[in-house]
Structure formats: structure tokens, C-alpha cells
Image 1 (spheres, rainbow, N blue to C red):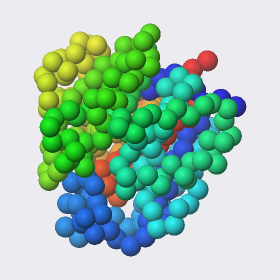
Image 2 (spheres, rainbow, N blue to C red):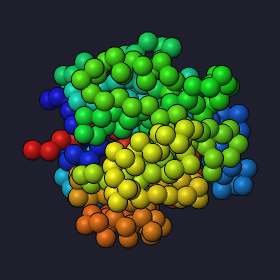
Image 3 (cartoon, one colour):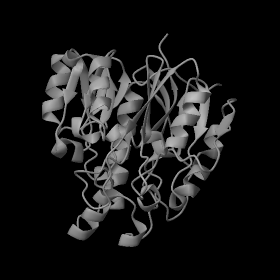
Length: 304
């Protein structure tokens, strides 16, 4: 069996969904690495393991309804394994192992037995090239990569993908368009921090996109996206909707999108554009700054 992902909205056939079964004790502030988790810890609203387990199980049930083969990581005791998207990603027949935050390095161990079922070679990038799967989208022979390239990169735990990784993919895929998007970052304000590209951009249907215009350091990057998809095919969101993770939906195919029940404005827009919306609540999971795309790592996704 071979891994193959041909695009962001191609038919999803096989996926790894994260687990929340053994997170350990509620973390301290110094153990957290995104401002939304820090905010919820300070407010006393940090999510409970039992609630997130239940939400992820409901997510899995829905995927199986569409005959998607669902894998779950092998359990690593007292370790957060919810956000599988970041630890690896697939483009065409290549599985790329992400160079992620050192605090998260063990997460890849939970995937090893799953990946052994496939024949594809795992591409390991040089250690100085940082990238996480949430910063990578693939659609219509174009690879979209979010990155950060300011002098304070090494001081920001919210900066996950560097310019070197973008340059690597430009060289790795000379036959594709590889477009970088410089993202705004904040250590303290979750409404201004763009943790990954999929927190401000999502591709849906055959030619549509959800975009947060204020996410991009350079306005030209936003304008490039509007030109690429066409203004009539773009659903724009505000800071508050970005904070709620409104772009972090997941396509089962180019006609069906998994979304939060609370995303009423988005869900109505999708339905009005002839897309089917399947609703699952991941509100507790989202308190750690991730939703459907963040918790899923597609292995096989293609159309006939």
C-alpha cells in the first residue's frame, strides 16, 4: 500500500486522527507553547482530557461514516498526541517528517507502526529547516507554505516554519508552484497570533478558500490569494473568527466539509455554495489552538 495525497480537497480515504487518552497532569505555563493554551490555563478553562477524548471519538465516527480508514497513534504515556497534522505531512507520494519543537519530538514515535504499513520512503529534512504540517497546504499543483523570517524567530515558540524550509520545497518540487506566506506572530495575544497557515487559510470545494486577511505580514500575499481563487470564491473572516479556528475545517471531498456547529456564518456560506456541511463539536480541543485539520494527518487522499 502506498501513501498518496493529491490535493487538499481530494477524496479522503485514510487518515491519522490524534488522541487525548494520556495527556498527563495539567501543564504549567512554562510547558505550553501557544498563547491560546496559556490563556485558557490562566482563566481556569484548560480542557479536560475526558472531554477531548469524547470529541475526537465523535470526529472518528463521522469519518468512518464516509468510509475513511482511521488510524490512531500508539499511546505515549503522559504526552499530548492530539495534533498529528504537525508531525508529518504528505505531498503526492512523499511523506515528509516535520522538524518540530523539541518539546514535541517524541510525537513521531506514535506514528512509526502505522507508517510501516506503507511502502513510501519517509523524507527527513536537515535539522536546521523547521516546518510543521499546519503550515503546508496543497492544491492544484500549488504548495502553499506559511513561514516566519524576522530576526526574533528563535525567540518565538509560535514561529514553527522558517524560510529555509520554504526554499527547500521550492527546490524539491521544481515542477510545482511553491508560494510562501509570511505570517504574523504573537506570544501573548491569541487573536493576533497566526500559529500556522491553516489558522488563516483553508481550501474548500474545487476552487474556494476561507481567508483571514489580517494574518499576512505582507498585503500582497493576501491579494495573491484573492487573485488565485477569485474574489467571488473567497470567504473572509475576522480576528474573532480566526481565534475560534474558523479556517481549520476539514474536507472529506470537494463536496463535503467538516465544521464546528458554532461557525454559523461560514456554514451558511458553504451551504449557499452547494457544499455539504457535517458538524462535529471540537470546542474543548480548540482551546489548545487546533481543530479538525490540526488533529488529522491524511495519508491517502485522491480522486478517481
